[in-house]
Length: 591
Image 1 (cartoon, rainbow, N blue to C red):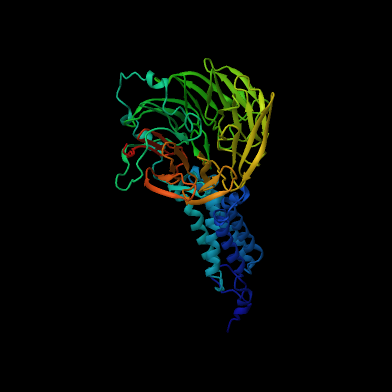
Image 2: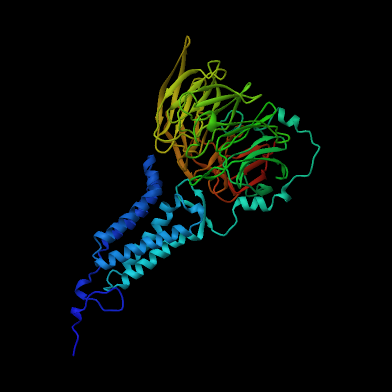
C-alpha cells in the first residue's frame, strides 16, 4: 500500500512536509535592510554637515533595521506559520539568554549598537543563504546564526563608545585599567621626599584645564619638527584609572583625577618618574555607558590650593602638598539636581577668593561660586542646564567677565557678584562641550558642534550697556567635545573628526584634512606648531599653515581611546587617556 506524501500534515521535524506549503523566502527586503545597516553606520562620516540626529542614527539606526528584519520574518518572508512562530521564539530566547550572560558593562548602549544588529544581521544572512531550501532546516540554520550573532557580545566588555559611536570592545576576561592600577599600586609609590613643593605651587606651569587662559596655548621652548631622525624619548608610561581629566602641573607635581573601583581618586604624580606622590579618594562612582566611568573635569591650581570636581558633583579643595581635604561641597545638594547624562564636567575656575563651577541646577542654581577659604556658597546665577564646558575668565574693554557656554547661549557674568552683564542667546538642542574663544579685543568664537558649527560674535560697550551681535556663522568648523585653537587670524581644530582651518574674518574654510578622530589640539605659540592628540593615542605635529594641511611628524604615544587634553611643559609632553599615561621628552630645535 503506497502513501500519498501530499496528504501528510506539516510537522516541524522528522516528517516530510507538504511541498506545496513551502516557498522560497522573499529576500529582497533583507538585502535592503542589511544595506541600511551599513548606510546608517557610515552616513555621518560621509556627510559634510551631519546634524546631531544623523550622528545618533549611526548608533541606533542598525538596531532599527534589526527590528525591521524581525517584522519581515513575521509578516513578509513567505515562511510557513510554524516557521514564523518558531523563528520568533528562537530569536527571543537566544536574545534573552545573551542578555543574561552579558558582561555588566555591555548592558547599556552596546545592546542596540552591537548585540541587536549583529544577531539580526546574522539571522538575515542565514535566511538569504537558505532561502531556496524548502524545509524547516532553513529556519534552524537562521536561528543558529542569530544565536551566534547575539552570543558574540558575551565575549566582550566595553569602556563606552568612541567618537564615531562605535563600541569600544575588550576581551571580557582581560584586565581593565582599574585592575591594572590596583595590582600595581604599591610599586607605584614614590619614595618619601623632603622636597619643598611650596615654591612650585606659587607659579604653576599649567594651572588647569587647557592652560592659564583655557585656550590651549603653550609658551616655551620650540620643539624640533623631525621626529623621524630624532624621535621623542619615552620617559615613563604607567597604567591609570579611567577618566577624561587632563593634568595640572606645578614643577615636579602632576595632578589628575581617575576612577579606581568605587572611589573617585585625585592623584599627584612625580613628573620625572610617574610615581605617585599621594592619592586622595572619596567614595563615589559615575559610570556612563557612552563615555565610560570616571571623572571628567581637570584639577585647578590657584593660590597654593588644589580644586577638583568629580563626575557625581563633589567639589573639593585639597592641600596640593599632602592631598588632605580642606573642604567639600556636593553639587547635587547645593544645586538640587542629579548628575547630567555625562556627569558633572566643569573644571573649577578660581577668581580672587571664589571658585566657580557650572552646576546646571534650576532657577538661579546654574552657576555657583564658593568661597575658597571655607567652601561656603557666595553667589549663584541662572544658566542653561546642558553644558560640559567650563567657566573661563576674559577681559573686554577693560572689564572682566566670567564666560559660561551652555545649550541656551553664552553668559557674561560679573565674577564678584554673579550679576549678568550680558547674555547672548543662541539655543541649541543638545549640549555644548567646548570653550568660547576670545579673539582680538571685541570678539568671541562660540563653538557648537554636531552640525551647527561656530559663530563669531562682536561685543560693543556704550555707556553701561553691553551688546553682542553676530558677525558670521560657519558650519566649516563643528567641534563636538574636541577643541580648536586660534593663531594669526585663523582657527585650527576639529570639524567633527576631521582637522580643519577657517579664516576668522569670514568663517570660510581654508582647508580640511587629517582624520585624527575625536582628538584634541594644543598650540605652541612661539613656533606656530600644533600638537594634535589623536583619538587613537597618536601624537601628530602640524604646522599652523592657513594654506594647507602640513603634517610634519607623528608617533604612537599611548594605546586606547584618547579624549584627554595633552600638556607640554618645556620639552616634556604629558599625555593620558582612560587606561594609561605617559611622559615623552621631545627633541628641541637648535637655538
